[in-house]
Amino acid sequence: MVATASPAAWRWPTRVLFRFIFAYLLLYNLPGPLGSVPYGVYAAYWYKKAWDSLASHAGEWILGRKVAFVPNGSGDTTFHYIQALVTLALALAACLVWSVLDRRRRAYPVLHEALTVYVRYVLATAMLGYGYAKVFKSQFPFPGYESLISEFGQTSPMGLLWNFMGYSTPYTVFAGACEVVGGVLLFWRRTAVLGALLLMGVMGNVMLLNFFYDVPVKLYSTHLFLMTLFLLAPHVPRLAACVTLRRVVPGPPSECPWNRGLWRWVALACTTIAGGYFTIAQGLGGYEVWKTYGEAAPSPPHYGVYAVESFARDGVEVPPLTTDHTRWRRVIFNRHGMMTIQHMPGTLYWYRMTLDEAASTVMLTDFGGGSPRALRYTRPGEGVFVFEGEENGHAIRARLRRVDDKTFPLKSGGFHWIRD
Image (cartoon, rainbow, N blue to C red):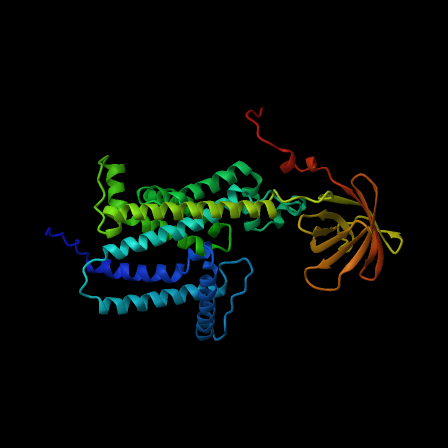
């Protein structure tokens, strides 16, 4: 029988830190990436339900009130901060109990390898999701007509970032491709360090953009960035020796059974199948979102911005004064059954729109509530609408003419090699 060398002992601070990191990353990421596989969504649902209840009661104990999760597009709500605090407390408690019960163990090489594989898959699936949303340009669409007609100073920091990214399709696709490539590289052990290095730069930039442009994904992007650091931490000495001293330092032999002999080929086959599945499934999902909701979604024939040439109330023409908060200034026909009306001072009002071409009517429903109202319309010419109906108890008549997109520099401008 050949004796096998026992793994090198870790220092006690390293062991304690690993126990905490193991517990925290597991609590934070579960049940991911199961939510990306068939039927895994059920596990994600029940895990989320448990967290909703736990965080709600924790919020009641900490803040004196229950904190409920309200899906509003923000990942930085009070609920999410309470959840992060509870995760931190549970991880510390688990670390303490673990350190007492398992104080004689000197190293965790197999458990560390297992956690590394798990974090690689969690980070990879997240990067594929975000990356494909950029490659197929649904996360950052071209600036909408509302942005084009609004004053620059009225743009939020997040809106400014979205317009900056959305204007340039090549840059957005490049940013998404970096995330996709980094995510794919994480699936395989031999390329995982390269993928983590790429994603460290990518996620570091994303994290800073979220912080400094006030994008409400600060908590999540910070966790994703820290996961790249976790994956790179064991390789820092070798990377530093290679980069600064120009020395090739081979990696230590794996102490995990699945990286040796026949199990190595089984693990490689499973990794290839899983990596291929996630890459293709996420790509198809991103493509479908792009075709349904992104820039590839079909636009209605009346899609565009319309200037209000004339506006009458109760048969009396209303002059276009910028101080008049009731007169229309522009109307935007959007995709997905929406209409936006801009009043003279620049205020925008959004409505759900149902256009009945057979009856020549438009039904508008205020997002803030209220009863729907119908407007009749005629089309006396190309790119011209005439609306008639009631608004705030008054009969109105508005004549609209479509604005040429070339009047917007962002629409008409392009790439120039030479600018004299």
